[in-house]
Length: 68
Image (spheres, rainbow, N blue to C red):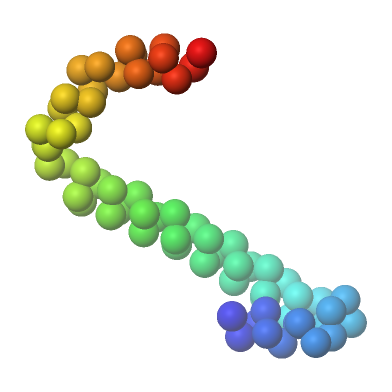
């Protein structure tokens, strides 16, 4: 956020190194967020639930009804 905040006031007039640092830090932040969500889903998605089991048995029927 710090690099991005430094480039907000100047816009395109900010030094290219600062713009590059802001863009790369944004990419790293997005990738970190994606890995975080994958880790959370892998951690908590392994538990079975009777509610989801019931939904999975009729998933194709729900798909056909809602597709139309």
